[in-house]
Image 1: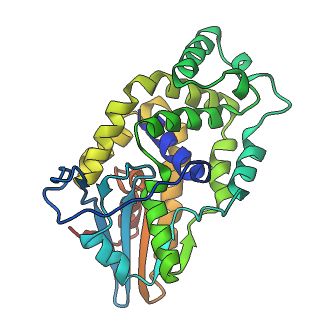
Image 2 (image 1 turned 180 degrees about the vertical axis):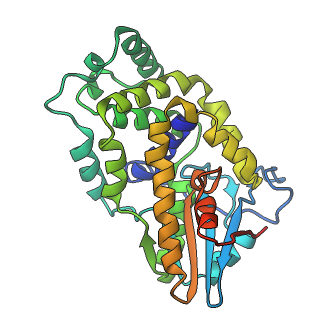
Image 3 (image 1 turned 60 degrees about the vertical axis):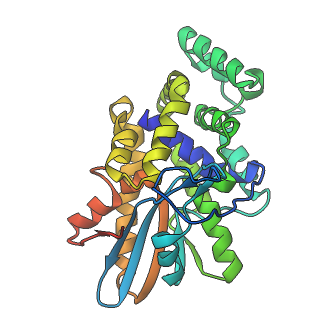
Length: 309
């Protein structure tokens, strides 16, 4: 399930420009984290960490790329840390307008290869077709696409039907806040880089990713709801267990999508400490959970990362 959830997260971030917009309103005074208030809105107190030296502070905030519009999280410690920061650092800066769709379509299609279903075993193809039918997606319409792209779309569509929306995700809310006040925006990676992590996967790995996605779809609603619940309560331990519980399914994908990127981001943070000021870094919560998290990578470099809440 970890590989599937990671794919869902990536799909949300990469396909944000292709989804309808939804406004997020902030609710009244908070009650218990993860619980609903009298107005039915959910109070969230997601985990936040900080790394400091004599003249630099770097906040690390784990995001969820797709959220319902009834989740209130941009307040309290998170808002204070963001307001105190001179720059917002994200995994990547979303391209404007249709630019993102152009990049995705250039990489997602496979004009010279066989049809997608021809790349699958008969058993896998049957499961795939059944899953597509349940999602209301036309098999024929996706035959010319790479397996990685179809995997991410299959993970995102059912979440949207459940009310989760990339436009309500933490990255989009933070980006809008930064643009509204002119706060500098920095991307740890480019949009093309993130697409490349999937597009450059060897085809057997892409097919494996697709097969795992199909197999895990029946559990999506339950597992994702548990992930969101852990995030809203700031339960980093449970979040790590949920995200990493399926590492054995496809460790190669986990290495590319999580571990190697975490190591590069730790290097970026190490270098950032050479400059004074305060940064607010917001990346997918999976990158800040588990034994190969960004915090663990920083600890290997001798840095102490402290939980804020």
